[in-house]
Length: 250
Image 1: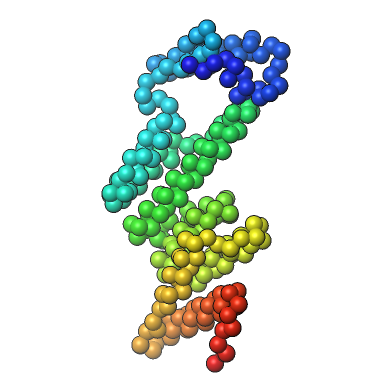
Image 2 (image 1 turned 90 degrees about the horizontal axis):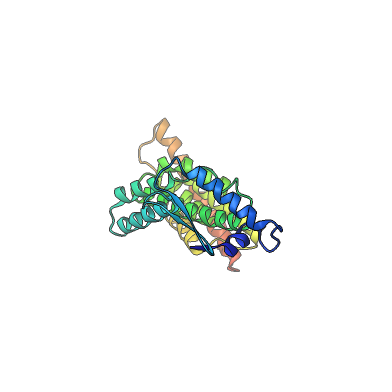
């Protein structure tokens, strides 16, 4: 049971209107009319407030939580395909920004929480897809996510790993430097440990030039040389940032 006073504070904050009790009753009537066609959903009146009665599985927030918990358990058990399926099913319950048409203090707080939960699960889903080796497939989604949420390092780390795994090392390097500049300009911070680790893995994976020299392999060799030069420049910049004098140029 939710007390009427709690409902008043959640909807109107600290400055409710004088007719607030009447307005609460009117809104409850609207909700009852909205739920009536659904069946199995009832708002009951108590002397001090109201309670919602419904069947299990009728409230999306609860279903989302259950699916995510099951997906995480399967992920821990290394059942990646099943975990991905459950997380995708959970994310389908989100339709646009949560509570976007509700103007009340409680809705603004709840909307932020629901959006954070969704983004966390999106990050987990992308991470599982990378473990499944779907690097190329997840790049478009991650590119969109870093554009929408540029300060969320998890998405950038996954993008660096995805580009690296797809053989697009130059783009992975560029992505790391882009987020590093962004974090410094916006927050005055350096990238976190996991993002730096992904970049170090990238630096340590220098491709070997092919032995055959024809038109196509020569172009690949030149790409490898350009990438090696970029990696060396990155190492030099990191040493300079740490105050270490890099060796002289050859």
